[in-house]
Image 1: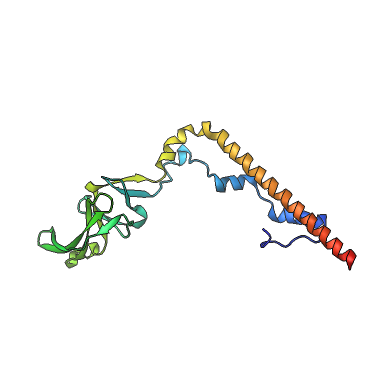
Image 2: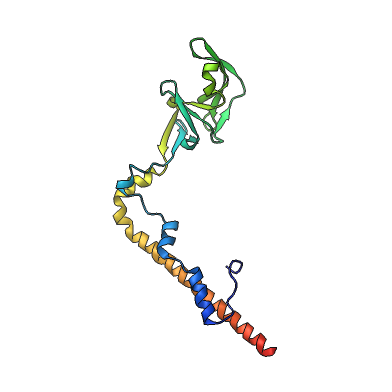
Length: 201
């Protein structure tokens, strides 16, 4: 706090101005620190990102923020980026993506259970260029969930949880009051030191 604001030097007036500068609406603080649960009316409008996990060991492998596309009749999804839980195989092999369309691929392997989750197309014919150098996952080997879906499930009990929110609000207001008292004490101490220095001068 000392590095962001100068200490007051003109008595009570400076202290009041300091309070005006640093006044904080406790409801704003509460909203920042403890966001309210999404209401049922907003559930349909707000969807969290989807996290993709290994179907066997449940390690996260990617999310919808890296979504590229879904191809092959909804049997595969393509992501631009994956987590460190996905290992890229070293041995390339031929794969016939469609009749007469041979591709060079490497396997994508789960680092936790070593299940083959999908593939990366290293070389493709021109009609499959959109698949090259993307992470292609077989939907049979991955599961998914919507981030934040657990809290949405509990939103029906939101009214019962209101006292907890009020308790947090009271705690935040208490902290703000203590901080304001500390600023007052520091300001008065500085004022006393300056008065003493002027008297000696």
